[in-house]
Image (cartoon, rainbow, N blue to C red; front, side):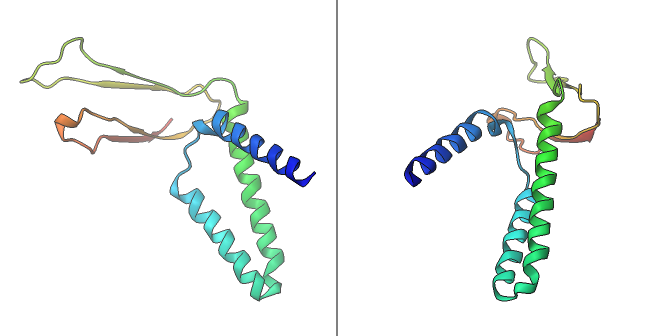
Length: 132
């Protein structure tokens, strides 16, 4: 019976990660806070007084993550980005490239766009960040 539960849990987590969470990008802050929660639980192993605050911090961390996921997936629409360039580019002149970003969420979002240029240009610093 335990084996069936483990198989069901594994298949469920695999489906969840491959079809729903694949579109997410967790930044460093998410992992640093998760690591901090783990360290607090390690401290609580030696000092049991810290166990309840550790549980409250873990519950808060989980609720904030679930709330963030709800904001992302339950509202209609999503941000849309497109790149507009000329049909033919010139070697000698500057070629304007326009990146158009539209937000259809009912709230403002912070974004970072990584524009991956061809490796022949040797330019790896094309990041755009902003709020809208």
